[in-house]
Length: 305
Image (cartoon, rainbow, N blue to C red; front, side, top):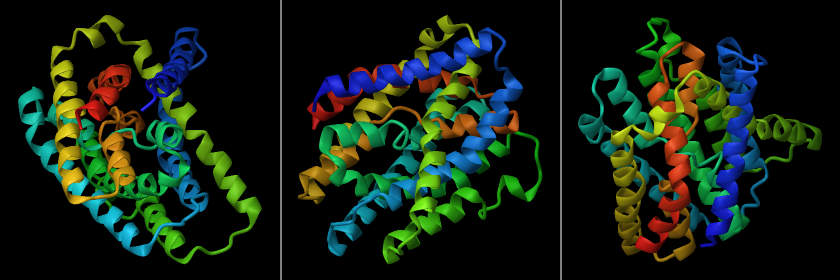
């Protein structure tokens, strides 16, 4: 692995976060703007990014390998789900914190950071494995993840627990598009691509806005997060990568999945918190600190397997 590729990608992410931070400090954006942008990311941009990933994938792998990758992806998320039930018991002080640790354990940044990093390190031909995990990720985030966030929002509408929403509908559409590979008008594909490409910047903008009112020193003094990062972003990926290596002979597939498991905390749970008015302070700290530490943790994971 080329560590310089990961370093450059993380530097870009932090520069985008800085834009939101400075914009809020200068009065250009505020909490209301953050919530509005979060709603756009959750309901429009991120689903478009999912569709773009499928529409631009070249295919080119056998059905047997595709099924193997899908099975591996489901197995990975099953293991992360179990870890998400156990680890928060040691880190969370109350129900809200435990649920946010569950969100951090289960949802890594496989889209906004994973796609560019993996394509740069392993090549675009392995992105089909990322797409498979991205579909599983989004179905989970828009069902179980949405439930964990909304139950702290005080909202009692069916929206908080409904399985039929933008993310799940688009997830099913992605599966159908990948199976049947219909020919779609170029103007439609390009339009979806433009919307999806805004996801990374807008989500980082929201993180910067959410950090503007937070004393930054508190992020680096959160001892529990360092222990969490050691367990979740180093030890767990190494252990899961070792098991995958025993079960799967394809080294590129295993390498892709290990990188995905080691990705820092995802932005989507925080977007949902901002959208619904739930306090996402812990998530903001987890995102920034795990992304910063990923400059070290991801190479350590690769060396560890």
